[in-house]
Length: 143
Image (cartoon, rainbow, N blue to C red):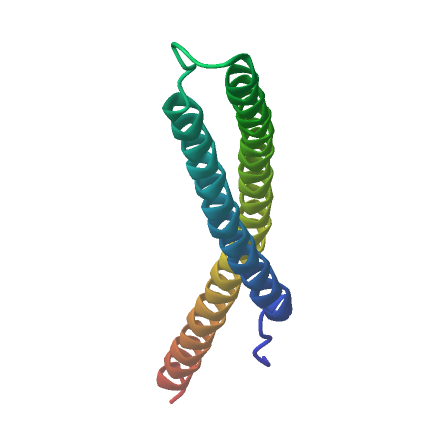
């Protein structure tokens, strides 16, 4: 009986490569999300550091408020980008989960294939032993 290898070995290697790429994408997405959070915190610090002047001319007061308004707009934009980055992390995590499921499915097929092959080989060996035993017993029975 010829040994037949697992024919989906190439598919399993491809699934593992896809999972590795998905892991790398998660790492990149998390780094992007961390950077986005840092930008939000920086904008918050900038905005908190720009206090409204207590006593100033009208033009200085207006300039300060305009500056704070611009910083608030940048903060809002940074918060939006941070949310988008978080959604990106979640999407990359879903992709990683899907890749891991696909890889595991092929691994289960390989495990079943290996178990079936081992059972087949064990049955063939048992049959060979039985045949040898029967032949020896038959020879002993002859005068």
